[in-house]
Amino acid sequence: MKSKFKQLIVLALILFTSFFSYAQRFIEKQLPAPDQLSTFFIGPLLKSTIHYGKTPPNYNGEILLFNHGYIDLNQLFFTNNTFYQDVYNDGYQVVFVATTRGEGMWVNGELLAESIDIITNKYQVNNLNIIAHSNGGKATEAAMFFYNKRDKVKKVIALGTPFWGTYLADVSQQWWFNWIWRNTGLNEGSATSTTYYCRDVVRPYFDNASNNQPEKFIILGASGFKNGHTILAPLMFTSGSILYLAQGTNDGVTPYSSSLRPGASYIFDKGEAKLDHIDVALGQYVWNTIKPYLNTSFARKKVNSTIEISKREIISNYQIINSENSYDQVIANKSITPTLVTIFHEKELNDFKIYNNNSELIPLQHKKTPHEQSKYQSSYTIEKLQNLNANSRFAAFIHYSDGPRMKYATNKENESVSIRFDRTDISLDEIVVNAIITKTGNLYGETIKGDSFVYSFTLDSNAKNFTLDTSDFENGTYSIYVTGKHQTFVRSIASGFTVGQFSLEGLKKQINISKSAPEYTLLTNIIDDQIEISNNSGRQEVSYSIFNLNGQLQLQNKVIFSNQKLIIQEGISSLAKGIYILIVNDNNSKKSFKIVKQ
Image (cartoon, rainbow, N blue to C red; front, top):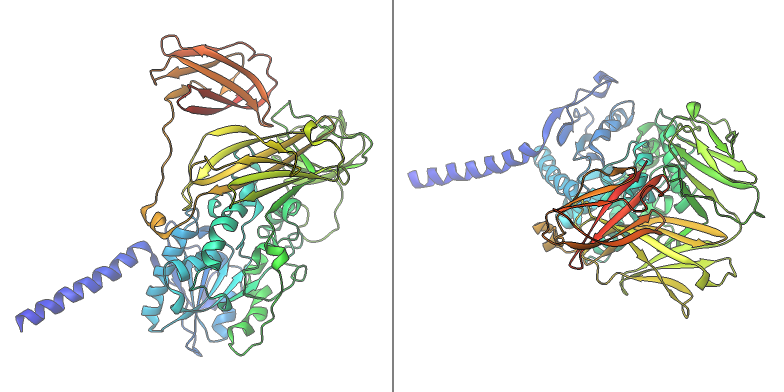
């Protein structure tokens, strides 16, 4: 008897410890009934949190788990939102799960998987339904198919989930463009949401898996980045304007084409849902639309979107001008007028002034729809565009309806990236294509602050394109900023690519390997007439190169350290104001620094 009693005690301790370890990863809070919940309810979301809704008197036995991709916005589901009241009235037990803000889909997926166990145990049910907003849909995929909770999930309704990534995340990986991204308020957790990471890592893993269950997914993709109904609508207009340049129709964060998980059921066609990314998380706009899809007998429509979701190209008909770089000059065929210019600025529009050759420009007036005007973005039609200057930091996308287009594509199988030009009869050997490439992470969503290096694409006359071999790159994810330049035009593209294969074993080990770099230190990255470098590597002779952000070589030389210090003065004072990349190479390895010339 004593032996059996001890065994029971040990078993109870194991079960208690297991439950307690789950609880330690979540704060669990009970919400009052929706009609007693203050509009200004703020919960402690400093860590992962589960908010349990009150069980409705007409409980139908179904659990609805709501999950948002960003912990800060999880309360969007039950503040100033009718979702809680709506589902409560219809008899559903609701649970709101907040995972993390910036840890990415794999960490969030693991936490969501744990919460599914906690919730099904608490309510003694075998499975539940998930309503996931934004990156919550990708975390749901990870929970179901990576952390093996697929049998505990009946249906997933994904609201504005970027299954194929978003160009906003691509832009966020460009360190010089980060201030614009910050103005959208969406500056974290983007490494696993880039178009290239989702296309080359996420989608092949899930879509080709034997346990994939696409029939469980119901997709609500929206198209109204200009048509928001909340106080966040101006931010969606700003981010949606950036996104529209590269991926077309979108909700302010997620392109419609990216919301289309292969094999799923799609509620709306492109252009139908005039809602932005915040609107689709609000019950007052979508509950009556999505509720019938929770009924297994409800007929669901399919949309053939193979063409939409299979594109691997980024197309540019624009030149990007960065106001921090005085060397950035408009280069265009003067016969092309007028020119549409989209500008993203650090100052709010009411305080922002911009000039073309000292003549103040007036922004285009948009239709008077609610919240349409963005604080940080404006557009202009300019004739005889010459020289832009403003009272605020800005980035200008100068569009050319005519003239050459530059197309960027990745080829995972051949381990290369390529650039192609169309709508031009210019000889390709007159065009120079350079790129700044930075390692930004490993294949498992961990951020890496890698060095930035400059690469030149090689012209393939037979294929009529420019290529860059990436087979010697370390495994990981890379941002790329490409500039194609001719004496009559410049085209710019910000994107990226991946190298290597994703694996379950690699994720569990959290591999993060990088080659050692020489121990060089920059005294300061703000320079005027000299650059000072300290050397702890023991090597004496090195070469250095300085490139602008268009990948153009400005200075280079071979030097010898004196007393472990090097002062570079020659040519520095003549550099134009702007951002540059300094590369130090000692033949064994190389190190790069970002420098700002005042």
